[in-house]
Length: 333
Image (cartoon, rainbow, N blue to C red; front, side, top):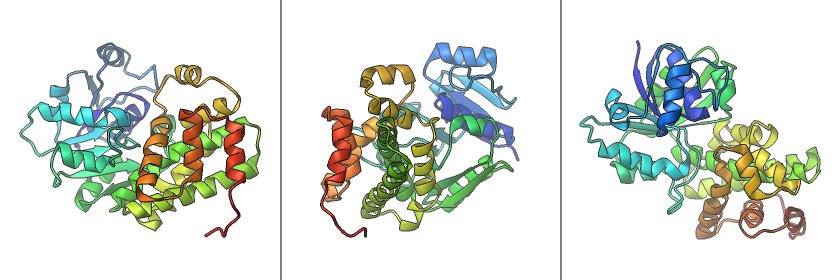
C-alpha cells in the first residue's frame, strides 16, 4: 500500500532516502530550504549537486515551501545537519498542522546548544508522547541511492512506528532492522564521526592498519562507556548503529569525517579542508559536544579528547597520537 512521506533536507542523505522510499512505492515530498537548489531538482529530476547521475523515481516531488511539506503527510523524516535540527522542528511546528505528527530523523549528532540527544529535542519542541524514531547504521548515501545492498537500524520507543518506517524503507536491497534502544543508536551515530576524524588523522600521518584497527577498537570502547552511562544498551553498540557505522566511517573515503581527518594529518589547513569538502562535517561539532558530555558524566574518552584538542586547541596531530601512546599502562577492560 502506498504511503505518503515528507522528507526534510535535500542533501545527499535526504535525497537518497527519498529515492529509496519512492522506489518502494511511497509518495515522497522532498523539502529543502534553498529555493534555487529545489528549482534545479524539479527541473533536472535528480540532485546533481550531491548525487550526480542518479535520476528521481516518479514518486518524488520537491518543494521549498515548509507549510506545504508539513501538510503533505503526518510522517516527517528529517535529514538535516544536527545544528539545524531544532530550528527545523520549531519551524515545522509553527506551520500549525492539526495532525499529530510522527517525527523520524536520519541526523547524527547532538543538539549544539546544550548537548541534548535529538529525541530529547523532539520531546521539548513537541511533546514527550510524540512518536519519534531514528534511522542509523553503516550507510553512504550514494550507495543507497544506487540500490546497493545496505542494512540499517530504526530505533523507536513506539514499536509500531519503527515497524511502519521499516515497511516504507525495507526492500530486497535495503534491510531495515528495528530496535527500542533510541539512546544507544543516537550515541553510536554521533560519536563515530569523531572517531572517523581520528582514524583519518592517523592515516594522514602515515600510520598503518595496526593503528587504524586499534583506534576503531578503543574508539568503540569509548562509545560504549558513554552510551551505557546515558542509558543505551551494550548490544546496540556491537550492532549496525554502533560497530557497523564506526567501521564504515573510519575506513572508507566516502566518509567526509574521515577525509577531513586525513587532510588534517597531512598538514592541511582546517578551513581550507572544510571549504573543499563543501558539506557538513558532523564530527567537528560532535567532538566538542561528546567531550562535554563525557566530562559531565565522568567518562574517560581519551581519543575523543585528543581529537577535540586538535580541532579546537590547535594541538599538533602527531602530538595527539603521542599523548595517547604515553598514557599509563592498564588492563584492557
